[in-house]
Length: 106
Image 1 (spheres, helix red, strand yellow):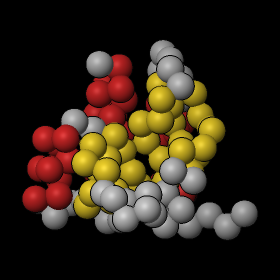
Image 2 (cartoon, rainbow, N blue to C red):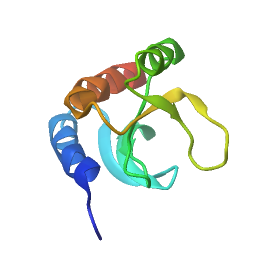
Image 3 (cartoon, rainbow, N blue to C red):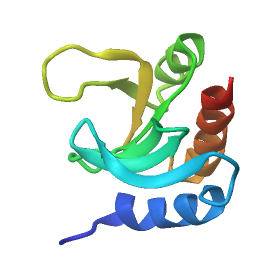
């Protein structure tokens, strides 16, 4: 399987978060494997090579407004308002993944 830059960066995110309480790695969501908290996907690399995270809608709106991400479209033409997709801004991915973990925990 070919891995690109996003998948390579995601390895560090997985390493940092996989030991957190309730976190598992793997499974499929939107056609990609990723990080789950108690069985619910919260961060992944999409099939398009984007880092994707589930955050509160207001936070996703902010990231989109700042030009740091876009609403995630899993391929059916409907954008997911609580999922941000990021191709660039890789230096922010770890922080965004931690935010997504905190959001998943409630």
